[in-house]
Length: 516
Image 1 (cartoon, rainbow, N blue to C red):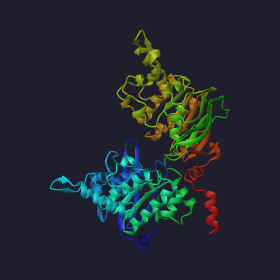
Image 2: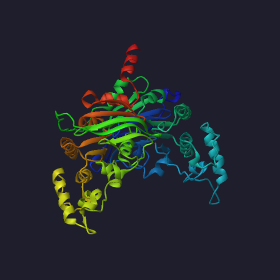
Image 3: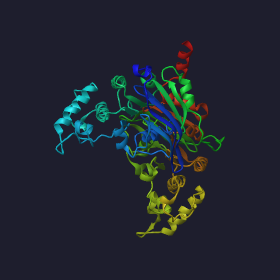
Image 4: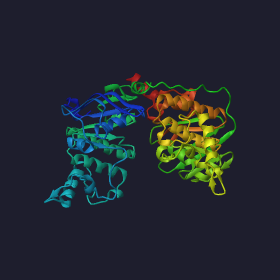
């Protein structure tokens, strides 16, 4: 713990009852948070717990619908990111928002360049940039160097220097170690300690409990947009307590019962699948009528595995075999011909033509079968789409409506319906219920289970552990690009999965705590 934090620094940020709602989703539901000068305050929570929304509220990207935000003792409502930055709150996102084609100095002072007689003073910017980089212990980074040529750790240093250039009193770091090698994390922690020694507060977001133990002072835990724990001691709170506060959900999950019948023949066989920097050595099978789920944190490689199996990414190692035949890597058309279909995570940008009618979105991948002598048979398209819409209980049933007019849940049904028309035998689902309200979730769960009951194999990814466990027959748990466990879903608990993906061993941690 930093000396400043031990002395009990002044409260610089205090949130009370903060609420933020988006269509169909209450992302923040009365969040509480208190951050003191000179401390590292860790923010912990599962994917979807509300951390990203909270960061954006603090950064001025979103305005809360209700609640109180106090900064340096005064109630504030930031009009935008620039206002938050000007007030002294800087945010370093996991995906660094640097401009690759600009120099280090230009990035550090972007938007508030030193000026003389109305002109940008590049020499002064370079001198001040060198001073800030030196303050961070990285004076060796040339101020004139293009950011694109820096390694990930160097880019992160530039982001920190930019925060300091605004005289930040609070720096928010979102998964800062995610892009760093092990030896670079130690340097990151050294810089954080130097910043807190100067009285700067740090909000540190991470899924890695060992990092929170090492660098954190206090911990606030979010769960389903609510604060489930505040101001826990980072180093002494038992691991099991932290994990248990992240589990259990306010949302009611209604899952269809699992069938008693055994799965059918093997459809998909993946062996040794790998892509540099994303995942390695992936082995998995999916049988007819079986739902296989992949659990893991964002960045664990789970979505990349699905995209590689589908051919949207080119495998660099391993094989993908469907019905006994190897699929050529990086070939989506071959995957579709073999009976694979995919509903991607970003359905609006990656799967749907929002201005087109429902029927045209459904027939998109099988369009040639509705054409005769160069003319499209729209009546046949609509009839086939209507049949599938009835099967999926699409609302409204009028397949001539534009897809953009549908709710999130019904848009997802349209994507699934597309592959039903194509007689897909194996369906890949990436975050199938993202942005879907609670009622529509239950309907989608039933659709997925009905597909399996009709012999379709399903391979799905979800950030929500209860969803993976409740819907799947078997589960693969991924961490940092590798499968760390494969087991029947009934043999795993939510705590088991979280323990595996967060790199802590509950068994080991409990043993250490008992011994202590």
